[in-house]
Length: 253
Image (cartoon, rainbow, N blue to C red; front, side, top):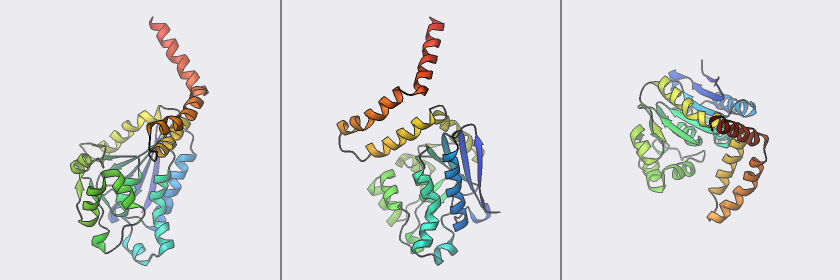
């Protein structure tokens, strides 16, 4: 049964595109479910980070070709809804890529803040080989992830990056050996840094980083950070953590 599966591992939501017989191709229904799952994670105050993955053997083979062939603008935007929900997510996001990420599946991987790849990961734009113009903001996301030249190589010349090549290009943050369970465990472990931070601080800092990425000068970034930094210093979460640190220091002195 094709579905989006959601589970909690501590403070981390794991969202899985599950349709292995069709290599997790995104139908309109799956995209709608994916967007709903991301929204559910954002509304859950106990979730601090989100991992998106696909049931082996693939990560996501792109958009379902039948749905794609019948789509016009409204249909295409409906197909985009799933990975755009990941791109818009206010919480830290990780794509655990254990197999092929093709077309819209590449978009899904690019939509995450960080990509962790298994040994069988493949990153394949493929749009042009299907006779389709790239969509969903792929050209923008890919150039920001790997730079203009590599993005052109992947998009216009059909270069496919395996896990190690993706890591070298900066598309994958790290490569994890082992099977899908090992990949997912590594992603959850990686997410623990976010799980330990105050939830609203994570959201504010991610929002600030998106803003400062558009600024021209260091001074502008200092100005953009000062108000939320003062607010965090005045927060109950910081007061509690500061008191805890002081107690530990006094207890060991």
